[in-house]
Image (cartoon, rainbow, N blue to C red; front, top):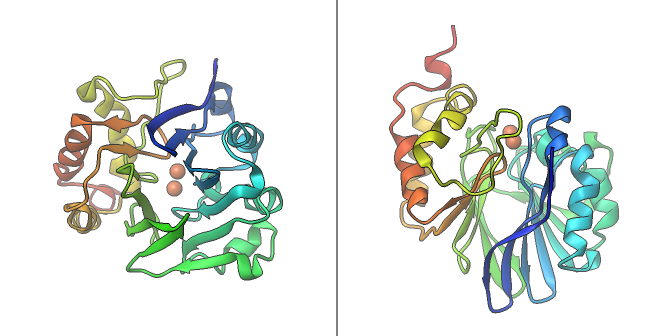
Length: 251
Ligand SMILES: [Fe+2]
Ligand SMILES: [Fe+2]
């Protein structure tokens, strides 16, 4: 079981999109998760910060790139424990972060142990442009993929698309890798997750329609491996090809 250091998946000028490392032994405590930091100049935006057991690793990784008080945004794709479970710790450690989450989940998050008050911002169903360092990160609706109030985050400058649970892969022990190389064999690690957690083809098709005009160079999912270049198109084609998902398959 290895510990992997953060890795910069995009860098141009003062903008970086950074994967925040991994401790493979965390698989004992639940499914492996990816966290990402968008850094521009001195400031940062943290995507799907994660649960309790990864908190220390993610915190230390962030500190390599920005000061904690300069993390301006804490963006959550949805409400799951692997996404937002350490929220109360993050609110203390990132004193200046504005939190964004679906308007469906804002009233549930206080159950994680913190009265968020003014810090929390609702993302409306149609999505929004979230101000960041004088420009925007786009919250793209991806409802029911898999949560009923669900967003992905697109950075129009780096063209990296954070896809939440879409593109998730579950690895056999000691078989983890960061970047997808052999797409065909990688589908074997994604198929069962998408078949069970994604409710139906309607949700997938609505989402694909929403992103069809986005210029995406990299898809960075919350679990599994990152799709770069041609593998972006291969992933989108693969997910569109399913005819039966979720509700079509449960007994
Ligand atoms: Fe989830
Ligand atoms: Fe997840």
